[in-house]
Amino acid sequence: MDLNASLYLVRPEVILSFSALALLLVSAWRAECGRLVSILAVATLAGAGAYVAHFLCNDTDAMAFYGLFSNDSFANLSKILIYIAAAIALMIAPRFLEKAGAMRAEYPVLILLSCIGMGIMVSATDLVTLYIGLELQSLSAYVLASFARYDGRSAEAGLKYFVLGGLASGILLFGMSLLYGFAGSTSFAAISAAIGGDAGLGLVFGIVFVLSGLAFKISAAPFHMWTPDVYEGAPTPVTAFFASAPKVAAIALTMRVAVEAFGSQIAVWQQIIIAVALMSIIIGAVGAIGQQNLKRLLAYSSINNVGFILIGLAAGTEQGIAAMFVYLAIYVAMTLGSFIILMQLKDRDGAYREGMSDIAGLSKTRPALAAMLAIFMFSLAGIPPLFGFWGKLVVFQAAVAANLLPLAVIGIAASVIGAFYYLKVVKVMYFDDPADVIFAGDDKTLTWTGAALALANSPVGYLSIPVLGLLSAQAARTLF
Image (cartoon, rainbow, N blue to C red; front, side, top):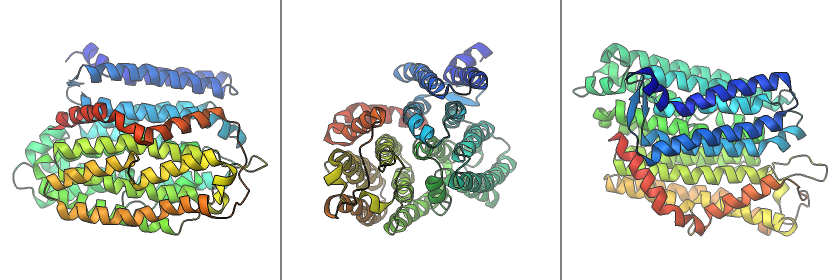
């Protein structure tokens, strides 16, 4: 394949790269133009997304740069979710960061650079491409976590994320070196062919280390230890970004590596994924019960939901991968909506509140806000008829179809534990005496974005099932 054809297939990444550099120059010349740069960054994501949508509608399936990069339906659907989540994270940030004295034009630039890395991650078909994309996304994320540099919690979150992220990268690199040493190639296809027979002990260790490194990136137990601290310490718009776009990219990358590189040894990695899924579901549910900080609660909720998503991967089937995409799309809407509501919890002085006690009796003082948060909590709990129920249903159906009935039963039982702390939030808002702490906000962007996401999580969301199911099935077929 010639260079021009390859550049055409990576045009979304090219658009994001040149736009990020141009916006970086703008921010260097006019440091006070953070809002303008944010608007231009959203427009850039829309432009790149238009190309991705074009590829997705045409069911493009082509390789670029001699097999290092894949432009297929799987990658393109992942990028659509990533760009939507990143655009929402950009739109909701300016007012919050200005209040914290941290709004600078570098914020949208870092988001764009992170999106480039995530785009490379989901399209990677080689260990080298995988690592380049992963580190580009991670380096941007480390800076974003500590973006409120005068806030001690944000600086601590960035440092913890950086140190533990470096450890995870080392684990991942060690696993990649083992795979290369025993398989003789860094290509996913070549690795799959090399381990098609009887996988030796070295290859098994390589698979374990690679999956362990990826488990850190998706904040799956037992590699979840960084998540609550980073989610609590980072600025809330950054936390909303971390919980959505990078999560989609990391889970999509894990899917591609498991199916394309390790697909011929499903018996080896399926046990690992089942164990990680169950630990994530249980630890995420139990760990959230005693949390009094809403951001930490949503961090454990994220760990819990990753466990449910991994049930689809444990199935190891096309149906399981399609179910994961359906769940991811719903999860992005649920999580972003929850954090948008948190960003509207302000007291009389305009200070942001995030404690459980702060929302006591919220239904009496801010009924619309309480209703939207209740929708997101019920949806995260998977309670019908809200749309979150459908995400859990499809992954459990995939597990049952793959003869993993015990896994589905345990997952359903554990989801009851998770429902406790979601319902606790609703109980505090509707049945406790009003704390009279939260006052009306004036950010229309948050109001309308939160309302739109609440509507998507309501029974109205079921109207998207035909399109979402079609796109998810199309993406899953690409990997098999």
